[in-house]
Image (cartoon, rainbow, N blue to C red; front, side, top):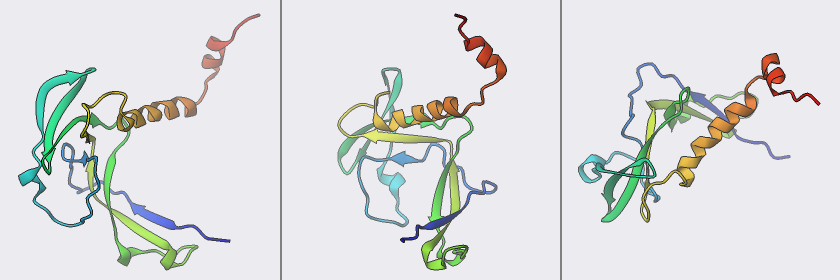
Amino acid sequence: MEMGMCAHMDLKREGMPDLTGHVHQLPCCIKYEGPSTVSCYFKPKSTGSEVEGVPVEEAYFRGRKLQGTTIPLPEGYSGFILSENPEKRKATVVSAKESKYFENKAVFQSITYWNHDSAPSKDDDFSRVFHSLDIAKALHKPVTPEDLASSSIAF
């Protein structure tokens, strides 16, 4: 029987840099990890226009025009920038070889997602993911006797 991976995460928030307004979801894969002078080349700006009530931003990446919008994370949620730390691997039930340890490097409260072929919309897959959080909250909300009484139908 194959064993699964075990991951440990340190999600402390105290003293972590706040990257709100600086986290972007680009419509591409960048095969590089490390320092870069991104802010010298990637300069998002507001267009002053809205599509379906969504404010549109504009930027260029490698000569391609991107259109995006910034979405605040829902109340009660936070974003974390995690980094793997092999030295802090913890051996618990599984061996250290099958365990990973991630620690928090920064936090954020909004994310900007970008499209390269269309303006952002409430119907974009990325935007719709946040709707599932509201559905999950409603499904897991405890039902009170008052809720039951108000929804009862007398025959």
